[in-house]
Length: 413
Ligand code: MLT
Picture 1 (cartoon, helix red, strand yellow):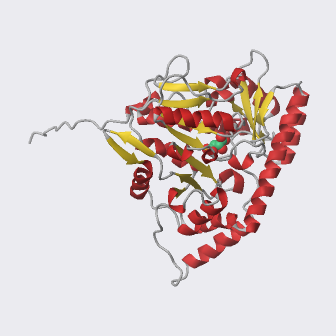
Picture 2 (picture 1 turned 90 degrees about the horizontal axis):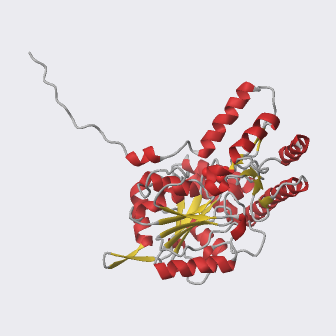
Picture 3 (picture 1 turned 90 degrees about the vertical axis):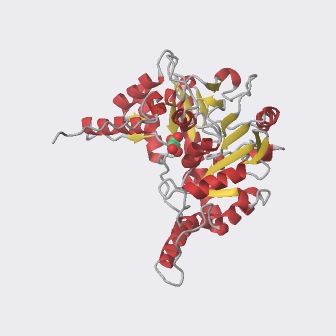
């Protein structure tokens, strides 16, 4: 019997993924570090690359986590699915402590990481929107918009067509300025990762006014707000009218050592509305709809662990840890300065943004430090074209690692 060949249409990929220029920067760095470990198995590598924490979870957090885990093993206290948006006990604690109840618990959505939310929020906006992104910035802003099809291909300049880049240069104080042209969706991060600089009230007010005038929405990444030591606003909602134009994302990862546990939250105010096709839409309702469909929430023990951060002991532990990271970053910043480097950040942030020697690119300096001193940094170009000529160093490293880093930098001179 003749075999009949049936031709099916081929499965198609999301071709926007093909536009992505290179590996995800943090994975690429990990790959290079692993290669170095094989090449120099006896060397002591100083890792100031990815911003991962080194202080373990606080005792009240461990206690809450253990207690909640025990509850899950007892028929009387066992819990199945929780609310997609998060348990009321955590949302209420956040509203009261972090926002003095100026934000209501219902406006807060608990999630498994600021990265997750910052990557997914763009989904509730049309792909036709014009997006503005600081340069340099956390690479997730650009890459998730590329994946979603909101950009044109990567250009020879190393930038994607269709994005409005907001250059952060020495000339403008390394701060993103509102553009003259119209944009719809604006990513801001304060203190900015990687430059380590926080935006002041005047600049944030200009952004809020811009968003109002253009009916634009600001996605405000506050993952590092706990590290602000100056009088810069910690929340965009300190700016009048911001609730009408901004979504804020915060994280327990860096301030409370949750990079492994995973918990964060996003605030979508009720006042935030968008006009589309002649009707007014609530972004809160849209995000709630999305969360309910696509998530079953964060696990109960982890939310209990996060709630323990809002007890007096939890708050004290968090303040002390953040303070110790800031001291490390400042020590690193001062040490590099004394060695003649131009540095930014390290005051309101755990990150130090260090200029490379003249005519040395960020990859060249990264490779030089890795090969000659086994110091791992992040090349600035991984955060955008304006990041070339810089490297980022993380103050989350152990103090002994930072001490040794400065010694090795000195020996390189
Ligand atoms: C960073 O190093 O910038 C961050 O830790 C990476 C992340 O949070 O995903």
